[in-house]
Length: 191
Ligand code: GLN
Image (cartoon, rainbow, N blue to C red; front, side, top):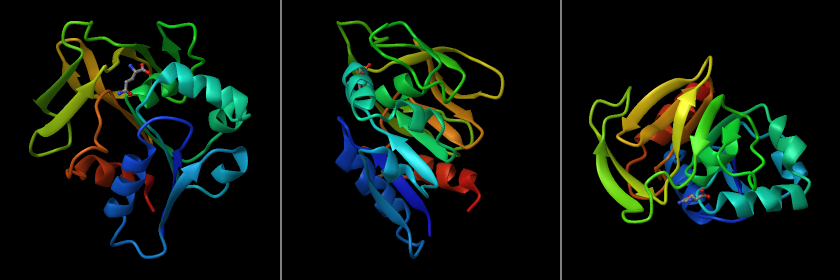
């Protein structure tokens, strides 16, 4: 089985847990559960960092003593929206202390105030059919560093990135029924 944790400090934690449980339904012995403290990271194959409010999640990471344990986490990272901000190595907001798990620069709230949310059919490298991507006050990556691969772009910037076992999305694959990106991620763990 595969052991997946979801960083459960703030944000759409329940949706991530439900989506990974569904994606792992045919893998007996798999577990999906919340991560609030460093000891919850032990033995995990993968960690989802959810959407939410990256400044709040960053503050709670410090408060719960999770910063160093997350930086040292050796499993795969599945980061969405606010999670993408946290996984980056640089962000345009000093209130967020990024985890530098993926070499990319991220801009928060990249859509501006007028149209801050959008749903679009997105071409994602590796998927045969477009993905219905839900963007909610989304960030974008503005550039990626060595080892990181751009999987999807929107006019505002980079919307999906893969880096080894890690994947980051400006949108929310955990919302809705389409689990192709979860499956791609789980395949990439090689277990
Ligand atoms: N704008 C939020 C942030 O930067 C992210 C929004 C989301 O996760 N849906 O923290």
